[in-house]
Image (cartoon, rainbow, N blue to C red):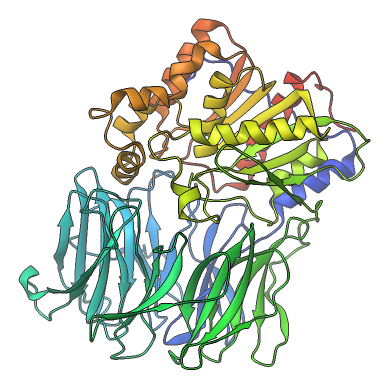
Length: 628
């Protein structure tokens, strides 16, 4: 589509110093990979995603021979993949140009024959947004969301001879396939039939051996009531074991319980840890690998169920990403800090720790470590993370207030090439874990209900005041920036707090909430109904009050908007509505449109967007010349 709006400028370079230019680009282009997943019954067969080719794609790793091969090769990349339990088959999700709508495909672990195409994995299952996939040895449970709601199917039979699909669950409400028992007799379903997708309930089905829906019976139900969600995590990797690990929030934060479906009894785990908890089973089912998240940092523990003992594992300070236990007891996990690039590490049973998967080439150059700030706010203490250029002069500096997406997410002490670029460009970077963020308890996360956007910006304002008052930020050179929900907050901030901001950078934002609701994917409509207390037809004034379009006439600062043509989360029409209003007013703005969805998996595209953002902000602040 040809835009009538002014296009963002993209210079060939940001820095006049060749070393500085090479350094920031290397942080984005250096090879990275996710923590590998392995086949349950064939742990030498692994999958991970990597940017080695310049696009994030799926890779297979045979540990027995230490051979790697690229599995997918699609113009806009591939991010979702898993393995069958025997490791013979790779499953990956095929959408169209990042629109997240599509179907699961399969191909052999060893690769397809020349000229052979990947095959549709699940005959009889229509295209949709993925809502959970549980692969067993004899059956597969898959969930798909569309505008009509959620459908969960079971397909039986061995791969290559898989039978037709049987619907085991169907609802207009948001739901998903959450966990399958090791013996493939029990399926846990997450659902929101009570009307609140943000605080789901659980239902467990016993899967019959027939092809009729009535062959599958409800074993148990669990719901903790209004405002208290339950999430099924995983069954133990033991045949006949009917214990389901569940996350609950009965005491105001995510904690753990074990639900024994054999007796329909539960055991809450009372662990002496202050933060939010998740977990996975050790292979013998006698211990749990505990992930503890507290104040933007993570750590791992082993919890012995019989002894009730909690032992901290020796991980470094920073952020621990996905973690799992291999059959021999080795714990593999992703790790990074604000200073150090991400790596995949293994903690062996003898206590030694080392990197286990090193991508080719030089690692990303390190960056500046962040510091913590705890700022009094209208809803309680706000945790902010601050990074200041190492060689900056004393006194206030241009400051970027970077607002995370979600909203139910958090900024962490992890490596970020995005943050490092802004710091190299001379900006202080301030992350605000506003109300609505995870990591600080259920009350903090849910405080935005009924008034989303405006509530978070009260916290952003408090941190902005603190940064100016303490001499950290130059009040005339403050930029607000974010993507997705952070992009929404950016546009809303520019209209409701115009005196605070010298510029704004909003990537894939919600800009016109009423139009966004009409066009977005159904699971997000369900999320919005839970967050706002109803649909736009039921509470129209609330949506208008919290929509950036309502305040567009108050915007004073120049704004850059980046938008994906195929975005199902923050659709393009509602962004165009906002841009058209900006054009009518004559406010300075620029637009960068790209042919993908809610972001891009193509590294060269990411580089262009980052150049556009930093170059725009520097020009808006009167710092137009390249950084030395």
